[in-house]
Length: 284
Image (tube, rainbow, N blue to C red; front, side):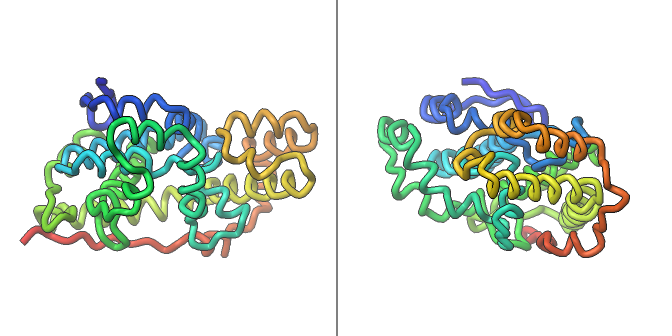
């Protein structure tokens, strides 16, 4: 199967990855936005969890990760709810890892274990392994963190493809972990990561959209207009359900139009977003 990614270009995957990509849980991610509700106030920022998952798969494959780590890369975000991290604000999850707490449940009730078994993989052990190219704790680099940083900044117009490809050429694997070849490359990604957090995630309009949508969803759950399982659908399915209610529909329109934004006090609101910094290791 040939995959086309707008950042990394074309690459091919084998049968097990093809079947997983075509599965319903992965296809659902095409309609789950990476930035939560940000697309409601800026439709151009419409990158999806699917594109990100494909990008992380590419990076793990490109840097020599084995087939099990490639599978884990493709599926690492499959349990994200509609609107991604908005669910963390709905359920007041300060670790921002709600999707990780339901990962096993989502995997086990899907066709993914059957697909994996068909190709000789055990879903009960595959995701428990240490996949060091895929994931690392902050402040280190990993495929997941590199892709969403580059992808979000590219979509927002902060960086271009030449910069991205130059940076990718400066990455390598040392002792199983992703490192940069030079201090200059390390400084570049560290500064870009800071830029992503300060100018993108914490942009007042983006904070407004995510927190206001979280308030709306929380109210819809309380009033019975949404059920918790509805959040395991995609963004557009949840929006359609909310739009059947006149009050909720108007509130969604207000979010998109930034109504009440001037009254929105974002001072202090960004404090609920995790402070993130990168300090990449340099190859020795």
